[in-house]
Length: 457
Image 1 (cartoon, helix red, strand yellow):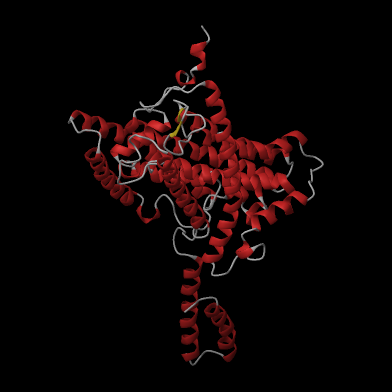
Image 2 (cartoon, one colour; image 1 turned 180 degrees about the horizontal axis):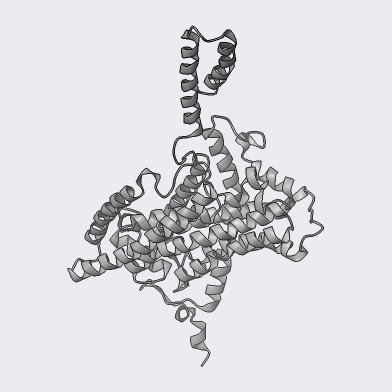
């Protein structure tokens, strides 16, 4: 009889839902196993077809058709790519560290997958055995788990570059470590205001807080933008793809990889995209919350409500996946000095300062007696608009992030044009002078012609 309290798994994981019924340990284990298998299958299938979606989107942006040979409309292209990579020869560099070279692809993929264990995907599912939480592991510290696990992905990339014993791979790994560590700090700092508003580190509580107070993207606009930019850098996507810059490092940290090991890095990139999109939807866009209605946030729970909220979460995540793909084919790559300047000179100071501002604003509104609701969010939104205007004035004229073509003083083309114009005037003066010789006039013509051909006036 003393063991009976241990069978109540509900005591191990505090329930955020007051209507939740205790779930026996057998039901909990079975439900968790089913959720793991379903999520893993959907996740891998979705990541595979994300590659097709990006190729189709790139084709649309570049005004071409894209993959259209494997199956109707190219729908079977991911399967064809998988078979191709599976049949490819697995090569191992002679001087590589064999074991680290082997486990590096898995270390790059596993952290992205583990983060989904704590994400609340939908409203609770009612069953005859009680309410089933639509998160594999609804941890009370899910937010901290997310930050800790997401920081482990850098090890796979760094080990891949170092163990390959290839200078291009090593440079890609070093670039990645510097980039991911730099932007990981800014990304973590940008999520602190979310905790300040929710008053809890449970992701389920953060979603529920947004259901009655409004999405955090309105009250924490600057934090959302900072998080999104840092997420681009953390996933090594354009305009922050310096660790695998093909034009500079062949293929970056996975230069020596082939076959399925190369595919694991490819899958890890899209898995990180999906994870970043899911986190953005959860922290700033209400997670599975359906806007303009409270139907999904109050009982009684039903299968229809679970499916509706799951669809809403999928739509939000899919939208940010589209943003990741759209930016890749729209924005050029940053220089490395621009990357570091943006991370340390702009993103981190903004994130740290914003924490202080939000803490002071939250304390002030609480002291004024403003209830945590729509009016509270509108007050924070007005403050964000003022701060954004100040930041735009501060970042104006390229003082901190200058374009690649910026130079101090006149450019070479301007100097050339000035020189060409000056020589043209000298030649014209020499031709009009009665004392000028024909040889001098002829010798000046090629110079002027060349300068004009190069862009002179």
